[in-house]
Length: 220
Image 1 (tube, rainbow, N blue to C red):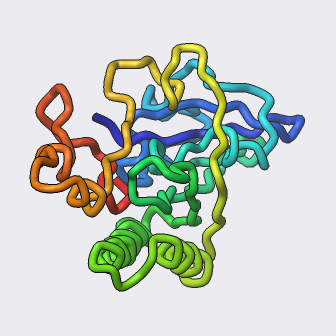
Image 2: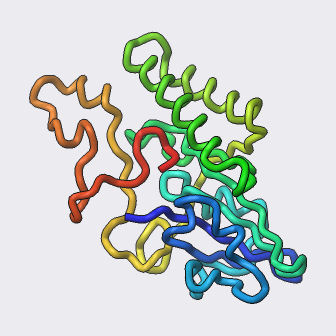
């Protein structure tokens, strides 16, 4: 379980040090908890580095896996720890194809939460239903979703290419056994016939009996 966030701290050389927050994506209040008196928001942000000296343009493609992270924070210690918050949107439906396609949308923690989540969930769910019913191809649905994110919310679309992590987890966290695995598309499960596993069709509970935070709408 968790609502994961990637927190990037800008260095004097304009590169970034990346840290992990297990609950920072639940809402965007972490942006207001980070300040010069508590740079790690009283332990909400892990002290250990995921990576250091990362160029800004590499944060999205190399580290911000949209299947895992729900929020991105860019912290500027040189500007009295000013924080820019972004909601991460996963632009796929979970069968593993092109799973790294995502977008970030700039958000005001006090004004835009939970509006962005609600809007994206509704749009993506509607498109997913249209694909299931055969009204749209998967490619057309994804292209439309990306266009709406860019045009309606001024989002930035990207493709996560990833890298290995030292401890083997996709997000670089401590590896507590709950690393995200995409949920198979419901219509793909139906194509397997009546013997398809019903539990997997609607998402297996994890080892604690809870379903993964990030469901088919892609925003947690």
